[in-house]
Image 1 (tube, rainbow, N blue to C red):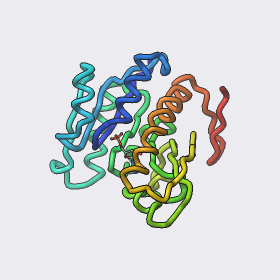
Image 2 (spheres, helix red, strand yellow):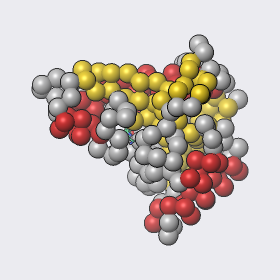
Image 3 (tube, rainbow, N blue to C red):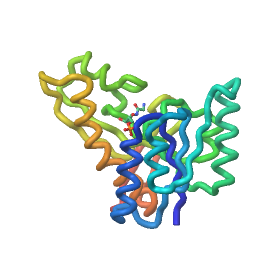
Image 4 (cartoon, protein in one colour):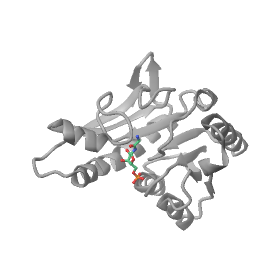
Length: 202
Ligand code: GAR
């Protein structure tokens, strides 16, 4: 049984999709062992509590640097014997120390077709740029901002009537299908990485 830590800063709808996929057995031989947030009031923590999953709030206010924050996080995750770290709307850049502690064992979901529109406002940026197709990307995390090898990626149309909210909602629906699928592939050891390219043996 693989032990997953989900890190989330916000509403946690992706966390919900992952927990539901585990219940439905779309993800097998894995459990969400802990949900961690840098924000005390993140609804993600509430979603975890409702499923009796342990939660941890780790505020950045108690740390002088990102390095110190991540060192404590790695210590905690090691104690918890975590196999896979899943970033689900966790709005912090991971330090080299963190990435080195979990090589090819940190996943992230990002609401754009990377490498287009990395960063914290990708849906707004894509709309402002005028793209006609948007989407989401599940990728391994490396030391860069949304730069790691891509595992899965899918597109959605952008409509003239779209606002940031309506487009993000369409992307969210896609994320809720794509992220559990990528996690199941990782858990079943079906992702082979060669350089930047990921190959799925399904
Ligand atoms: C998701 O759309 C995710 O792709 C995005 O935050 C949202 C979290 O939603 N992540 C990033 O922008 C990372 N750069 P959720 O809290 O409802 O899962």
